[in-house]
Image (cartoon, rainbow, N blue to C red; front, side):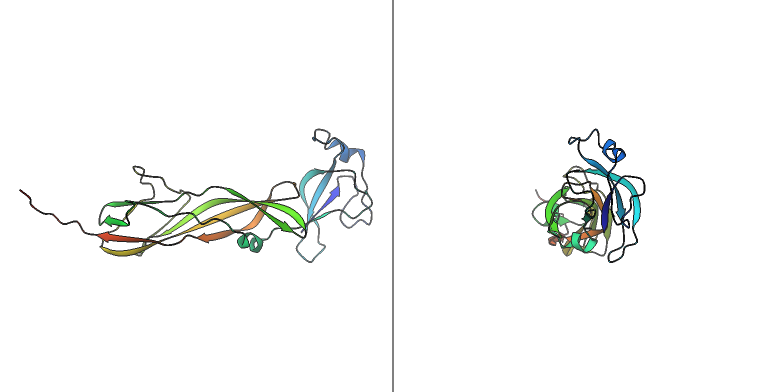
Length: 215
């Protein structure tokens, strides 16, 4: 978890009273709200009070009672992140009819963008920004590919695959997302962990071309 303390000498989360000072106000003189105070950011493992300064600060409204306990900012855990409805990246096949030839590149790619999702933590509004970082392909023939490249339509064949034997195949894709979150309009903070989202499998029929003499 995290807590904010006015950025004044001697202030800490363990101090019974946290006071404001001109230095904390000066830190936010360029803020869109000039009355904001600068707050140091402290973090501690969940369920403990072993506070450690993160080295960062942010500007918060100064209208709150300076003698009140500093605000505690909830942490979006990796488990919270994985419970969000992150989108599954679509599997796009070329040729698009679900049939391809042996020994010919079959273009397989996806389209995945950064998404921002709303949620709540301890009653506070939170925005979560999820960014696709990695794509894990399983082609169904025992081969796979791990890449940060989503690929692209033909004629770009960066993520194409060549099947060497005919037969039906199931193509699978897993997208790995990294995340950031912002509590009540505060700064973007990293999620400590990733989320893996599986796409619906794609069916592909690999066939052998036959040569025929025609007049």
